[in-house]
Amino acid sequence: MQNNFPEYVVGSRLIRFLMKIGSSSELDPEERRRRISAVFALLVIMISVSFFSIYHYCNRNYSVAGYDLLTFFISLFLLLYIRKQGKASIAYWIMCFGGILVFGGTTVFGRTDISIFLWAFLLPALSFSIMGDKKGLIIALAFFCTAILLMIVPEHILNSAPYSRYVVIRFSIIYLILTFIIYYYESSQQMLIRYIQEERDKFENVSKHDLLTGLSNRRDIIGKMEIERERHSRMGKPFAVIMGDIDNFKNLNDTYGHDAGDYVLQTIGSILVNQVRNIDCPSRWGGEEFLIILVDTDLEGGQRVAERIRKKVENAKFQYKDREFTVTMTFGLSIYQGADENIDECIRRSDNALYEGKNQGKNRVVAA
Image (cartoon, rainbow, N blue to C red; front, side, top):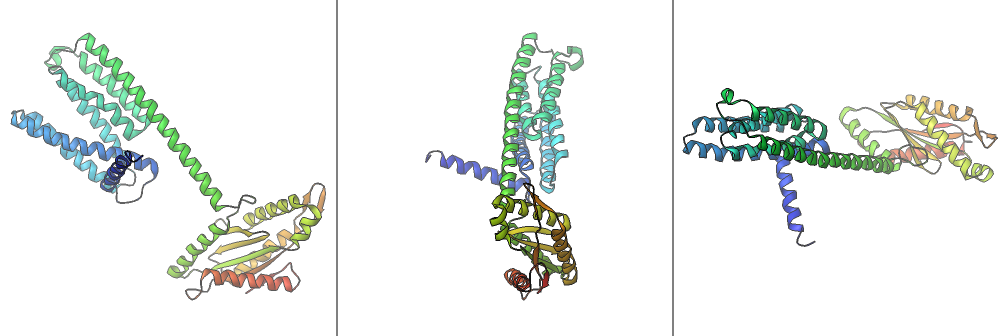
């Protein structure tokens, strides 16, 4: 472990360095992975062609040196373009088609110097790392067909002898094996990324929602109340907090059993979801208590919603294992009063109003 740790640190630093160059904002995991590969490829291309341009210039291959410089500036432009984009699909396609042109050129030059042709084997790695498994496979196979064509074109067309049959066959075998190995690796990596994302979403959902009712839990609702509090401070938009409690829930559990109690909690959770807007947030506060945030709602509007929910619960038919019974709820209501009040004080006022409703006889709405 101690021997591997420095390598991990170096790798992490390299990735952070590439991300700083590639983007100034947060990216989703898939885009971040593609961005790292694209930035790394562009940097390697820019560094390589810089040295090659000097080498070719010194050897008086001025046309090739100019070709290298053109590649350098195109790569620099793409790097700057990618940095400004949240999604850089256009740049990735340009890079891949540019790769087909560049490595197509090395294939042509390889007709006179076979060593230049070896650069063509970089194309599969470039296409898969930037475009993913399916699009990368299409690009890699498109280049394969292009390369084969350039290798066998007659001499009078390109002014150089075509590759021998044995070189073409060996290239085909090695290139296709390499392509499908990288394709398998990329597909496996994509499956792993999707699996990790799904598991993370499941964990996040469980951590923010009550397992029994599916409503937001206490942790999630407090976070959403903080968001509404900040929005109130910026825009002055009011929001209401409703605290609801099932009347005589302990007696219900003792009479019909805890399974019946769970059924009641689930049913009330569904009622709350159906009686509020999508922008509102009902939650299970704990036990038989529920807390609801009503966005952009004043005291009068909050009372109307709470009364509507109370009547809906009172009139609902609860039936469990052929036994029918009624359920009522008491609600306490408060409005967030502004910068002088914190979230806990707002919740406490709703809770106090709720207990006042209990003392008045239950099955009612009381505003703080």
